[in-house]
Amino acid sequence: MTQPNWTVETRKVTVAEFVREGRDALDLQWEANEEAAEGRPIPELALNRPGLALAGFTRYFARRRIQVFGLAEHHYLQSLSQRTRLERLQPLVHRNFPPAIVLARGRRLPAYLRSAVRRVRIPLLRTGMVTGHFMNAATLLLQSIAAPRIRAAGTMLVIKGVGVLLEGPPGIGKSEIALALIERGHSLVADDTVILRRTSPREIVADPVAITKAHMEIRGIGIISVPSLFGVGAIRESTRLDLIIRMQRPQDGGDLDRTGLDRKTRDVMGVPIPLITVPVAAGRDLTHVVEVAALNQRLHAMGYDAARALDERLMALFASKT
Image (cartoon, rainbow, N blue to C red):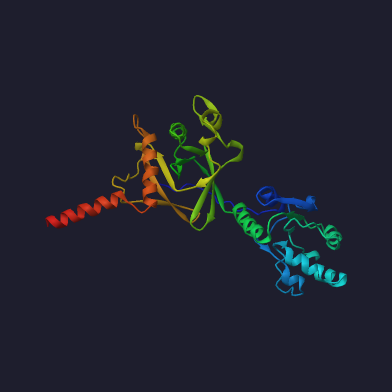
């Protein structure tokens, strides 16, 4: 079986994209220089509190990161004289200024910072969140936006909490199987094309393509809206990828596992994902086969391997006979 020719995409996150993705979750609002955010990259996907830089130690100032001003930074600057305050702000308004500044706890832009920020056109935002909570949530969002990803051909479903990707040649019946599973109460994530993201060294998350989200193509019928026909519970925004089921015709060859002892995996951006090959034949109820495969994968995740348990029982029986 050949490995799919998947190309890993890497993304550079811009300030504008960060704001669009986090406007609601991070309670972000523009304070100044919104027009400067479009196309402005965030070189390091982390956040920094510039306390040391404001205190005068600028040797290791992380100017490539978004800078976050909390209560500590705000009150410290307020305690300085106007001249000292402007001197300490120089690292932030230098020509190599940071990608953006965020004022936490709903603080507004201080008058002494307003002119400097507008002069160099630093994107400036505010959030009502507590500083520590904002930094944690924003870091996770940045990593999610920039996560390595691929576009994979296939239909993605959630079956009893198990994320299953159905793949195979066009016309083999992936969408029809998915439709039958949706009718049985399972959920669709994406049809035809799915975005796979590596969100951690051990996890792949599947997302729908925005323009085709919640829609399916059924041959002979055309495009259908899944939530309109089956309700909003029939779709999911994203899910973890737990299992890949490769559907193939018997004449396409390839060794099929008859016992389940020889478990195969596929490397997806460095994460091994369990892989099952299911032959497609006339009269075979593949809806139930896929459903059972998902449930069996769930048992594996819980630590129970039926094939290995039976094999151990047989070996014990042979040993006792001998």
